[in-house]
Length: 196
Ligand SMILES: O=C(CO)[C@@H](O)[C@H](O)[C@H](O)[C@H](O)COP(=O)(O)O
Ligand SMILES: [Zn+2]
Image (tube, rainbow, N blue to C red; front, side, top):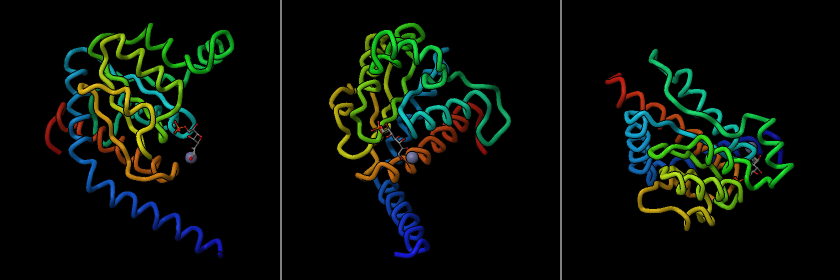
């Protein structure tokens, strides 16, 4: 296959996955945005976590909250748990890589806060432990997953919200996760700062 064909295959697969996701995700995305707005209006915040590309997604979300998305507005309270290398390396070194997010949540998470937990497989042990720690802190969870939702799906309560991308391909799932994050930012701004 030529490089051009390979590239077109990626583009078409991405477009197909987004089209399928558009059939099943909008209500869930709206619900998740309302959860986040409720938390923010009650002086809460959104903590986010994930591994690899999903760590980038967690940071992408928090930067758009803390700085801005598409309009001028005040900073919104969010924090990615994948950014502090001193904290992450020391927890991984002294305890376990599986605890790098949960230990931060036990210190920073407050009742009413939201955890944005991102994993394409739903099976990353550190994200699973983050969800357990969030529940212990009376936080609600918005989970971005894919495939069959993995062990994360089974762990979520009726108070939480799972946004599961209908695909088994990690890259395609990540591409939709980023779109979901931008939808969340837009809906949060719309609810907090009015029509645009
Ligand atoms: O970005 C990619 C693949 O596109 C990778 O870095 C990927 O995020 C990593 O393999 C992650 O460790 C996968 O974790 P998860 O999505 O299953 O939780
Ligand atoms: Zn990637």
